[in-house]
Length: 360
Image (tube, rainbow, N blue to C red):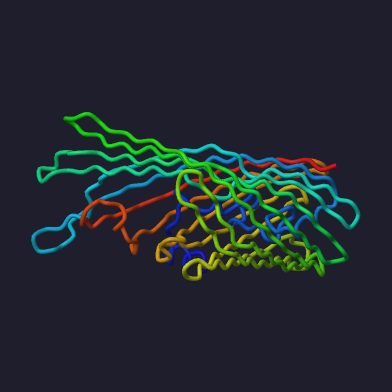
């Protein structure tokens, strides 16, 4: 019943231009994007949960599909269907999180490299006249990812794990704007912007028993400076998480995460994940992530996820899958320059992440 409620309440969500990358690695994706309570996760304090030298690397494949249609009405004002204007598909292959953590008694040092913000997006609009003949086609394509290079310093004492990260951002956003006319020369404009910036993150994880964890981290607000376009400012972030494994013989872990971001209005992100361990070597995971668009909070995204993993004493392999759908029912299209049309958007996304690692 809970899953049906979640699907019916939001089933919308996709990752595209300017959106967050909601997961860190394959295990995180399989658990709905959970990061704050995982070993070697996105919480600086999680480095305290790593007791051996740990190396990890990940790769990601993301696909996006967007349909744009126009609601058609009869002379009485009744909606009689949807006229498809465009169907855009985009596939992207990129790095996901890679890291190294080295423990020294109570001290942990490490280095991470991870994508943070996605700019990949493909927009197409076909304009037609009263006889439904194409007058022009507009293609507006963006590509780019913002990465973070992250030195990590952590401390652990009994059940207390704390840490601090300095995150150095870099990346670029390329844009190609094309106007295609059926009976005239086409026009095309290209541009590229480089971005850089930095921020600090502090966090803690308390592990009073093997069955329970509580965690928190705080990210200071920061600005991505550009050499070509305007700067982007991002707010401070509060992240809370819980981990619970019921006592007994069934090794099932329940995890949840709640983020608060202070944009022009408060923005809340929810994550939930379940992990089943089989024979201490195999794992089955599933979860979901809910978040609104940071520009239009009435537009919600939902990502349903699934994952699996295998580990030995030294090696581990994880796979993560995610499917998202975004609802534009309450979106404001005034900035798209498409006239006074009653548009219908349908966006879906697919995510696949592969992670592998070794411990010494």
